[in-house]
Length: 209
Length: 330
Image (cartoon, rainbow over all chains, first blue to last red):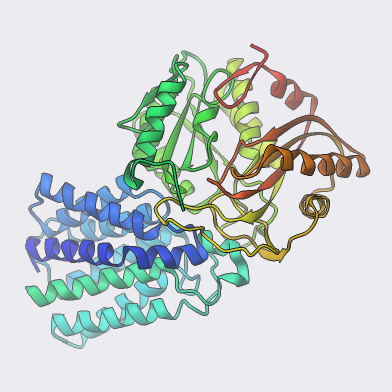
């Protein structure tokens, strides 16, 4: 996976967030404050602008730049959390021009660690971690089993989507939905839903490579 | 839902243009989205910076000026501002005595202000932070993000601002801000939800017979839904929630705050009950504010905040203040 692969991922993620903007906002209206889709869409638009203004030369630089733009433009909790995820991933990739599947797994593990350290959420708290963590685990296992990259990312995407759906019966323990207590049960977490979209975008980027 | 806007994407910028035009006592940096008092930075004075999502006006921009905040950073509607804004604001108000960040306890605000404080430290600006978490509707436990910052934010900004104006050092201003927060409790009730312009419809639906108890200020639904009833009873529900948390006594400062879509007429009806309730409990409202100060767009409803005063806090509350939203003694 080279720089153009990671640029393709960002482009796919931006397109998916834009297409699902209203859906994400509706999920957020139920248990949050009705802005998740609008905020992420604005953030990814800023990411694409930043990447167009100063084209990065390595995969790591793509992700660090993307993360910084998210932190600068999104606000709320999702800006720092997704921003940190992309930045940690980019840092883990260093300045290597070509990334192996194992390298991608390591970087995603670093991203997950960064998100959990910043937000303090564990699996089961009804946050984006509930989609992120199973996706990273599934990818790690598939890569270790020697699966083709596309297949491994398909598995990871499925795990993220299942993880997002599995937030429906959970009671939120972090973020704005936690104020609702038991009334947060019965709704999908918007952050977990957007994480699933971003993994699906990674899968599509692999299909284009 | 009809809204007086030009476009959903320019709401914050268009608001800032209006604030700049309406209040020559402020300096508005529209590009970086920071509202400053015109004479910032003041040498030797601790700078007070707050910020939060737009939609709570006059909080925070309306409380920038003599005796209160030195700068405010508005985010998008109900979305915390970003670290760049807070860093810019902190640089702009640092007169060499350091900067106090007043942060309402919401995950987004906390994360963005934390990042900003770290980056300010890298640039040599001394920053202290105070977290406002006065809302008794949320149980502070491992199972929530903790109590929200609501009406008491105004108390913290006013009282800490008055102390900063006397030239007190950062540690002292931060300690006092913390004390005001610890002495304050709030509870909110909604009759209808606000409408975020980008969403175009109310954040939650309440029928004509329902009310939402324990609401926050971001249009998030509250803790429980209940049946609508007389103002007298609703006021008592709110005051009971506060009194159950910390028994009311002594001299108090009371804010009966409208959420943006409530006629002042109704706020006074509720306030009469609040004052009677305090008297019953042996407490006295020695200072009071009734009006729209910490709003949630066009939400119908109110929040009530009570701060148990000391002589020092009363004196600082009475100190002169000159901002678009609060003004006396000067």
